[in-house]
Image (tube, rainbow, N blue to C red; front, side, top):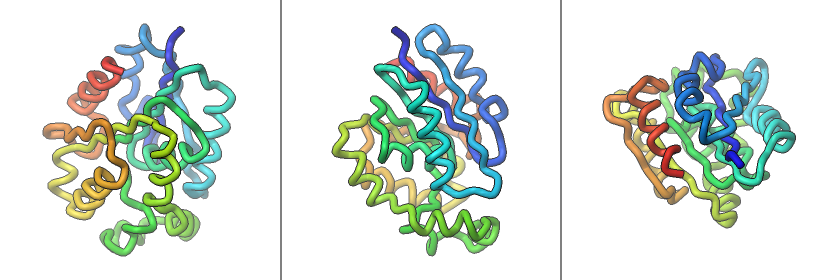
Length: 195
C-alpha cells in the first residue's frame, strides 16, 4: 500500500505553480500524491488549518506524510496539533508565529491583513511544538541558503525553529531562494525517497 503524500502550497499560488509537479511526477510510484490547495483569500491560519485538517481526515491512509512550503508549512504544523502524520516536512517555514512578529521587518507586517495578523498573534510555535513532539512525529526542516542570507529575521527564526522542534533533519538547500526551484525540489525528492 502506498503512503499518502500531502503537498500544501504557499500563499498566492497552487501546488502546480509552487513547483510540486516535478515532485509528483518523480514520486508517483512510491506515494499517493495529494495536492492540498488552500484558499488563502480573506482568511487566517486558523481557517487554513481547518481546511487542511478536513481534507486530510477525509483522505488519510495508514501512513501519511505532510509537506508544506512557507505559509503551507505554517498550515501543516498548526494542523498537526490535531493530526498524527508519520512525517512532517516543513519547507521554508514562514516566521509569522506570535513569538517572532515583533522581530519581523515592518514591511512584512504591513503587507498582512488584520485578520491574518490576528491569527498569527494567536499562533505560538512553542505551544505547537509541545503539542506535537509528544506524538513522536518525525519532523524535517528545510530552508534555502539564499533566503537565510537575504532575510536575517528568517535566519534567526529558522535556527530557533530548529532548537524548538528538534527535527530529525535540518537541511539548508544550497543556493536556493524562497521558492521550490529545481535544486530545492531535488533535495526534497531525495529526502522523500529515503522515508
